[in-house]
Length: 247
Image (cartoon, rainbow, N blue to C red; front, side, top):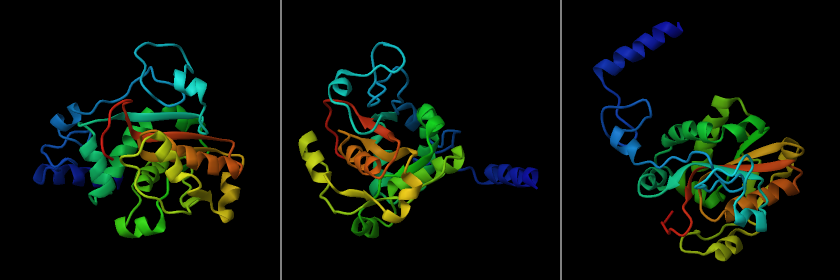
């Protein structure tokens, strides 16, 4: 049966060639047109083990940047698939604000590769949650649209709604690091009924973009407060330090 279904899909692709996720043709194995794929600045080792920032030189396994050494974060490790720049920005914003939840599957594939070491030690995958009012307006949580297929493809248990947003906050755009931290302070909590799924487990937190890490920090503190053994972070993109782009 599986062979018949595969043959059917291959035949259908010949009749109706698939459109790429960025709207071009023909589709490549990446899901993007060659031009769009070439504009993505994917992150490769070496990177900081703490925040995932790229290093110019390889300082060895587990090396951390000065910022992570001087001010350790609540989350233990972070990885991102690519740099948030003009090449990736449009795709990320289409998922976040453009009613394109189908892009979550593409990003899940990127995260599976970029976060292989984090996934290998994870006991559960949890998306950064939206406040109910924002979820109602957007109709879906972009982090969940990435985390769900990632968990399914890797076999790591998916933990939806374990982490909840208990306080609405204004958007993070235009705020400095201190402002972002203050904006999300106390905004997240673990659902009391889901604490059993968190306690003693290594949680992999999934989000779309790493900017200053303030949101991930607030989420990690809530998870650790509920008894999580550790929290790691996996995002589609990370903002290059010193570069300001709206998210």
